[in-house]
Amino acid sequence: MKKQLSIALICLSGISAFAQSIDKADDINGITLGIDQTYFGDDLYLITGDEPAYSEAPSLQFTLKRKIRLGIRDASYQGQKYREFENFEATNITFQFYEGKLFKVQWTFRNRQALIATYNYLLDTYADKFGSSKEEVFDEFRQVEWEGKSKYLQVFMDTESDVTLVFEDVKVAKRVQKVLAKAK
Image (cartoon, rainbow, N blue to C red; front, side, top):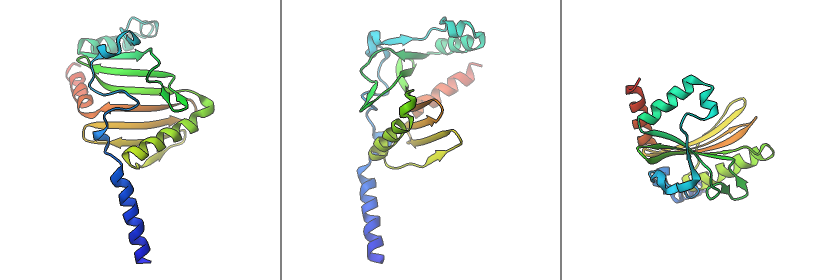
């Protein structure tokens, strides 16, 4: 029995040894954090705050324009290149830049017929790559996170509407929060 337990532990530690840390991830689905916003060219729509949704919500418009003044830009990716994940396609891709450099990307999948399949695919893919992580299950939400010292990855599912994949530079995100807090 002890021999079987030892073998099982060795196998499990071997699997974990092959998984790389999220901090060592170069990219997620071809997108590298820290690249310049000009890299995306005409496929990038920089949100200005003058869009109808913001014009109808003055407080949101004020907040977004304040972020822009502080060097924080929200953008929507209009291209096709980074949308495909095997058989699953992201409906929306949004970016956040600080001082012109990408620090956060978010893919949203809204195929209601494939929510669970999409979530499981992303979960399996990144668990294989970065090791297992604890899944948190709430009434209508499920999420798994991989957090390192410099990078963060989350797979999140709202069972009513969508699956979201978030890839973020932790250090820049903290710096952005400090900039926003100082500017109040």
